[in-house]
Amino acid sequence: MTTTAAVQAPGPVPFDKLFAQSWVVFRKNWIVALPPVIAFVVVTAAFCAFAAFAVIWAGVALAKQSVPAGTVTGLLIAYLCLVAIAIVVFLWAYVAMFGMADAAWTRGTATFADGFAAFRERAGAAFLAGVGLFGLFIAAVLLALPTLFAALLAYPVFTMYVIPSVVVGRRGGFEAIGESFRLVLRFFGGSALTVLILYAISYGISMIGAFALIPLQFSVLPTGTDTEFHMPPIPLVVGSVLGYVLSLVVSIAYSGFVATVLVGMYRDLIAQPEPPPAAPPPNP
Image (cartoon, rainbow, N blue to C red):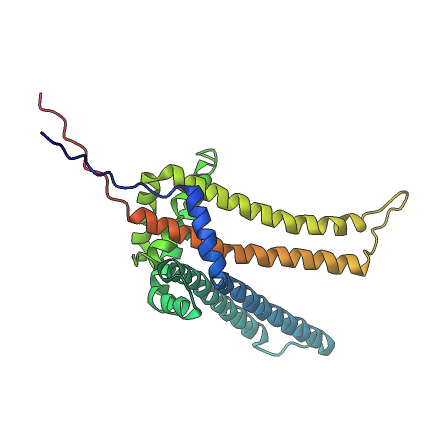
């Protein structure tokens, strides 16, 4: 009598192998990191231009000692419009980044066309998911003290697959939140470890910017018997600011690698077979 051994479905890719594969995909498709960088530059330039205009207008108004009727209201409306545009730009950057990461995993190459296609098709669902994520964040903040901050720690873990679910899985906004929770509950260990490593790398990058500002901070402090703050040397100011800006750009670009990791992990986990239903209890 011969028996056939049951074929066991492969489990999820180990996180170390996943990180290695993600780095290979990201290195060949570094363009995935550009949407958030572009959004940051565009939005920052727009707000700087608005602030400069407001300062110039305020100076002219003070010189003339008169404020034209409706000017303040106009500035407020312009500011709110700018905020709305910034939200759309960052929404595009986020959806496009995940759409390009999905294309990189699927075809091996990613283009801006993939990002724009993802934004056209999934922007509405991503916006609804963002609304749901904001509500969950408020709930996590309110539950922070009663849960000894466990709610805040759990928030980034249980929501890590929301945008991949929207863009890659083509789920609805609130449906994606539910799927993210279910995936994390099924694969909690690997999911939590992935979030921990990604946040640790992000923290290390941010520390580079902090270290760049330390010499500048010490240069303005009084020394010896002095009681007044000092003007730092111009080369030190330029170097420290450039170092901080560089770390900020690298931190923003790092989100492209994060998107690549999360998309790869999401694609792997949804391919895993569902666990068999629990057997009913025996009849007494």
